[in-house]
Amino acid sequence: MLAITDPFRGDSLSSRDGRHDESSSGDRKNPPSDDTLVGHAFDVTRGFATSASMPGACTAQEPGAVRLLWIRHVGRDGSIAEPDTETDIWRNDVPERFHLRAGDLLLSEVVTGRPKAARVEESDLPAAAVGSIHVLRPTGPLSSEHARLILAFLRSDAVGSLARGNFGRNRIGRRDLLALKLPKADDALSTALGELESAARRMSRWSAEATSLAGSVFETGQSLDEARRSIIAAGQLTRLRAEAAGELDDPGYLVRTRFPYPVALRLREVEARRSAGDLAPAYDAVLEAAEALLAYTALVAGALARGASIELASLEALQRKLAGTAGGPGLGEWTAVLQEIGGVKKRRGLNPDHPLHELANLAPEGEAQQARSRLAERRNARAHGRALDAVDLPEALENASRDLSLLVTRARFLADLPLIHVTSVTWDAFRREASISYRRLMGDHPVVPTSTMRYPSNTVETGSLYLVGRDHRLHLLRPFLTCEVCETCRTWSTFHADKVKGDLVQKSLEHGHHYPYRADIEVLRQADLM
Image 1 (cartoon, rainbow, N blue to C red):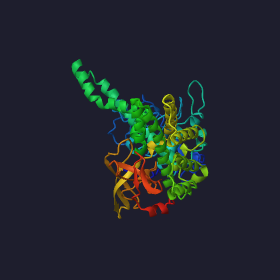
Image 2 (image 1 turned 45 degrees about the horizontal axis):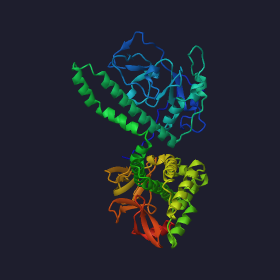
Image 3 (image 1 turned 30 degrees about the vertical axis):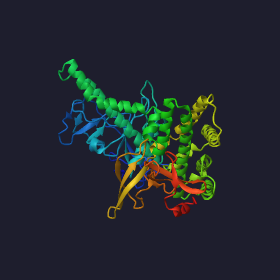
Image 4 (image 1 turned 90 degrees about the vertical axis):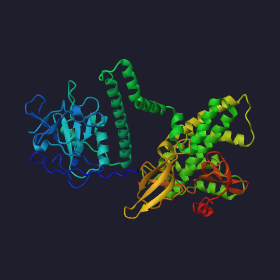
């Protein structure tokens, strides 16, 4: 489901401990701006002064009781430890001004390595920070996205370098902290950090489950044989998780399961041919896969450029090819599109999350450009009947495969930009959102389950292909890329407009089958492809 996160609103605080501190008070109405200091955006206090051995502890159920949080409760990953009935200390005599609120940020005063920092959530309350902890309370509205970015900054070496002291007790002084300039809000970076933190938390849970399972072997009174069978059965999911995660270190696995279907299928054929020792078919498969990769990325770039009202001169070459009487576009035209979109000027003003920024990664000069040129030369030589000698084929296959691998490595961002086929759209006029059924075409097989999501737009087309950006925005790919069941092989396929012997056809990216163009030619004209 498409997730839309609402901004988090922090509580306002105009005084601290009955005294007004000019050094830490700022504009109470505005969120942190580009040049805001910590002392302007937050009221900064120190944790409640007490020790674990002091009398006065109570139970968690007593009125006014709060859980005491030491810096040991704050994890390096920004988490706050779950309550523990055996080790937690609760007190009901902590002054109200030390009670934490949801949205407060905690920062370690004493630094060993990098600083620790975390945000207090409702689930962590009631609680009070104790001892060497700086408590940063927002003085105005602070979005959850900006708070995430600030936390990452507080955990950085840049903040850790503020620590001063001797004998291993380096501390971040309050005055230095108040004068620290905060990073400006950046939703794209914040989203990327959030996804990374979410992945880390999930893996930490899996690790904890495995550790707990291993520690339970001798707790049930079972025989060793029974314990072995129990561990094998109970640990199956944990082992499978580890195996699946390990597979991601294999580039082939990433391609087979996470790349867009047209590209993944071509690369899977390369892998199959090479593993079977079929040198000539493997060599052909490498060249076809390279063209499919460049064609897919160029067609997507063209569609996105049109959606962003960016004019590409390279599309005029595609137009001439499709309007002429000779052959259709090839590696030269695909490369020209990618090179043009690689220019910074063309992408100036786009949202940082826009996919065109990542598509530009295939265009820069250097090794990738040289690899493209070598593959294009090999492709042209084959197209003009200049076959390789059997003696030269093994080395040629190895070199071509190396060039293809370089391009695939540069195109790894495709794994994060899903290709989807929208199968149905239902618009809810009251909710102002659409319920969309779609197929996620990532990996080397077109038979995939149908999923659903909600999307705040009524412009989504049933039957069309879309690229999903990192910001979850849907980018229409029609008419650059279309889809249907191939009339030749009867498999679901993606197509682009092409020219064969002067006739306009639609050609499959997956297997090269082509037949007369079935879609609306007028749409090609409106997209400046004809």
